Length: 74
Image 1 (cartoon, rainbow, N blue to C red):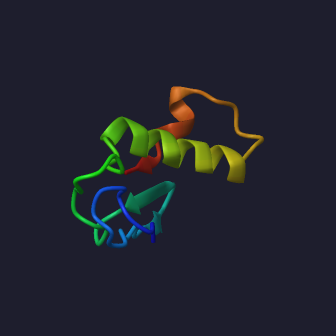
Image 2 (image 1 turned 90 degrees about the vertical axis):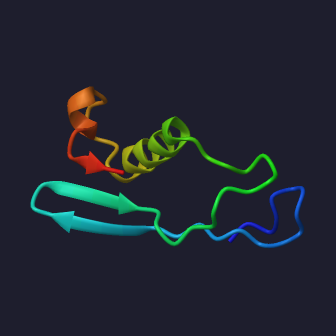
């Protein structure tokens, strides 16, 4: 949860389900709060970047390349 969006004083939910199918990892943010009035919305590029960075921290030995992110579905 995030305390608020900076405009409306209500908590925002960030929900994530991760599923492994074969060599693919799927990241599903369904169940997260709808777009909000404040500056807390995440465009696709930022969301992808966040997932890629998290995977980089979990698997630091995997070389960075477009191929490293191909099995990730967001």
